[in-house]
Length: 487
Image (cartoon, rainbow, N blue to C red):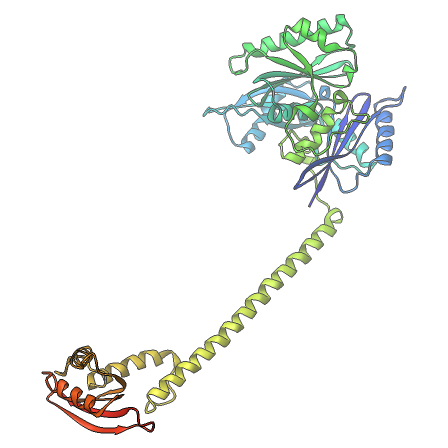
């Protein structure tokens, strides 16, 4: 079953949106849009107008929404705590952050990004992120007015940095600079991990402003490199993104001032995900990268910062999911009923088979031993039959060599050895008694009968051999005979 993910990147002067449908066969970009705010509008008015335009052109019903607002409204702090457990980290963060925050800590919504170092350290390195709860409430109220209730709210540029570091084929030490309006956000990436997030002033990307921006980037990188707990080295490449890039060729000036290779980020080509289409119409990577990354983080299962905590936590409403729950319950009930019916059918079939076997056991037992009372439990009949067979063996009905008589195998061997190989004879019956054995059969002549008698008389295990009867059969071609061999 496919799912739809809507990435909403709310920028300072525009709204970027990407709708991804995700299924077993991969991911498809079903819709995308970049909507600038109207000229002269403030932040709220511009976003209202952009949301109105979005819902009129993109069907967002049934989507899981992931939204971001500009990163300059988020406070980022790198720190280490002596805990590994997430619940303990959440408890201690407010006390660690309070001295460094410009607003009261009780007004902040807090989340953190864990930096996985791969070592067995006693402390946990992390990036704490906080946002003003009043601004968060206004943001959610604005979205809800258009029927949008994002499950995740994060910082702009952050999802693009996550996708680039974890899914991109990039140098081990890299930097992503997300440029929006007069502010930029610097993301330091190393060995597939995000290690640092800093907001830096950017302004216009004229040559003089670019040089100043590059100085700020170099100062930030040097300060980070000089930290004792920082495992990252000097960047091997810088990636640029953000709507401020436009087509001004700023990457050339960045490369000149930073003395590092610089290229524009294009998540459609820079990350390895199963995207089954590549939109070209009206797609500008510098504008759409973060909206695409927002949708991809959910589609591929990358855990990201989420400010929907505490009073802003998502509450699942019954009305939203009633149809799915009812449909799932009906399917589950049908499956349980099918399994139960199958078990019942199998049970009754086995019971029928068992009854037939029990009836067959009773028929064989009482046919063999008619003198036994008929009210015995079927379960004890096999044991009773073994007892009866042992009694018969002891009585000599089945000679076992324990009563002085020869073993049956010895008698058969003696008879077979004594009868000449050239005689045409066929035995049809053999009855063993207490002190004798009766054999019957047919042969070709009376002389053959006499010859067999004389040969068997020479056997030590027989005291005497007597021809009980010797007659021609109805066809007149064979001689039927019976002999009694006394032990």
